[in-house]
Image (cartoon, rainbow, N blue to C red):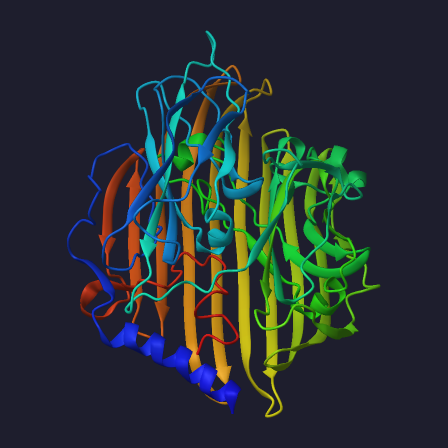
Length: 596
């Protein structure tokens, strides 16, 4: 009965927030979305900002007007806010970046605090006449336990500024705290954060091969109820275009990068396989054809989302008071991936030591192995055909812990699949490469608690589609004359939480971009481009009344239109303050097994 009453109290708190004014409502669909100017060449994305609770806030600057002109790290210090207490309903990271007009590459950017990663992304490239600026936001409420104490941090954004590369990147960042109140209760944040970084003040770890690992050993609290690992794996250098690579035996014939296209992140605890994370095919703003990404970059290019791996079935193993090693690797890494992660744990506040057991782990022993198919033919120097790469695993991890409020059993069942098909046409007049790739996850998590076996069932699906076509036309002397490129990229996440047959929460996120451009060449040097056009469409909705839609259209490197409210009643965006419309991990409110 205590379990039922506890769930009821949480449900009432949530319902109180719903029935009183708690929506953020923005402009109708027919008008240009706020903050956008048709004809502008500045960065324009359809992504939503982080919704906030009503009321006052406290701002803590992390750094202001840092200039990134070399590869030195930029340290800063943090102290908790004054005047906002220590109970927060939400904490939001905000950052603003800009780069002066000129020549400059896209650069990787990351922000760290207490060794933990707060932000990971890349920068926009400038042009000779356009100095772009952009704004990023991230819900960092999961770091509340760490933010309660002073910390040191650093910004990492390596850049080269010289007579050739003239673009100077600048940035500022701050944390915004929202004090908890009756309408916006204190966030149920994890009790502790354990960074998987480079072991200093924070930084990603380089994994050059599939056998390289990021490993960190922790002695965790002995009363862990739940554990989650947020993972970032960013392809760099030879792995920047990993989705376009083919197995080594075909690389020379197809004039493509080797190592194959199969990439997947593996997570283990003390050498035992514990979880899998798909790798998102982020495309940087200098990727393939830089003009395709001006002014709208690819999906998540400026602000990566981590993938959250549920390690709760292993909680009993972590609670023995002994050191435990959490390891991350990237299957297929081929020089190289930049990898980091944050381990979040929730503790039982009523008992110092929990016992239990891992009862099932069918992932152990299932190697991440791809099946390769080849239809390539070479007839008198004309190469036609394709290479297919497929991988799929279905597995289950299950375990329980005996807590101060009863036994909690967690059962995670997942199917993780990867498919990549590449078709080539190579002859003296052209080089054409078509890519069709999809990574998917289908996951069901069942949580049961107490003698009445009360619990919830969470189902979530992820879909990361990517299609791309690169083409080069050659003249009689073998010089490139043009290069048309097309890319369609997507991110979908669909979540449902049920108590029996009753749907407690449902959310749907879809973020897609389609873009194209044609480069012109003279003597194999780019002399111009034509036909740039892109459309980004973002949709979010849930069963509590939230709805967000934005469509951003660009042509010839400038914004054509940005309209809000697509798919929403009355053509208006409405977001409840506690939602995650960007699709980022959310296990502190709506997706918490005990949130309702």
